[in-house]
Length: 54
Image (tube, rainbow, N blue to C red):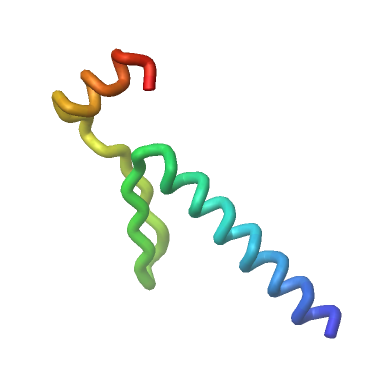
């Protein structure tokens, strides 16, 4: 029972962390080899959107 509770907590923490990362304009690739996190290249539209203070 205690082991399942710990596993559930770890899964919830990981999901929350991935959700937070997904809000930061990052590409997250999860494969059997591991996790790869890269930033998106800024496009003219995102540069313009950020300059307006959104």
